[in-house]
Image (cartoon, rainbow, N blue to C red; front, side, top):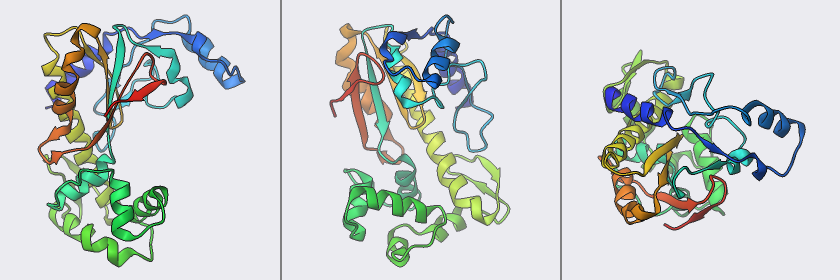
Length: 262
């Protein structure tokens, strides 16, 4: 897995970014600083798979800051081929929790699913309240949450009181407070990157390439002659060993103006 991932990340690192700074219209000081730093520079995305405790990717200091920059700057990033395809998991960590609890994945937005299950007034209310509870905050619906999201079951299965050992065997020293976060986040990260490796191998003989990885999503730089591959690429990324993970699928001519197609 680690070797496959390094091959994937090395391939991404060799792709010079196609940046168009004319896309930025609001020229406040921070935006001007961003333009000045990267406009006359050959920019690449250079990931590091080893600096994060949970296995989530970080970027090197000399990398283009794809994981940390303001989202409004994404419009400057354009494909080297013809268009971008983005596949973004719907609530990957919550779905991972369900998988570790042996609960089948719902084929709908997870926050809407929770909204109906726990009688919240809106999707946003369900999202904010549930995630806050999942990672340590008390909530009046706690007993209802626990009927589906059994935190102690997962802790007992993957934490020995001193360290967690996630689904894939990754070990992290942990106290009780951090145990659930480390179990779920590290498993979700390993799973998503394993799926990314699958997509990389699938595309090896094509001109379309993985352009970048942004947290729980991947962005593919698609050659228009290969657009027939889209459904297969989506299947490679979403068909996990935990079941089908629902994802949002978008296409666009730059990384900001993306149109949802699935």
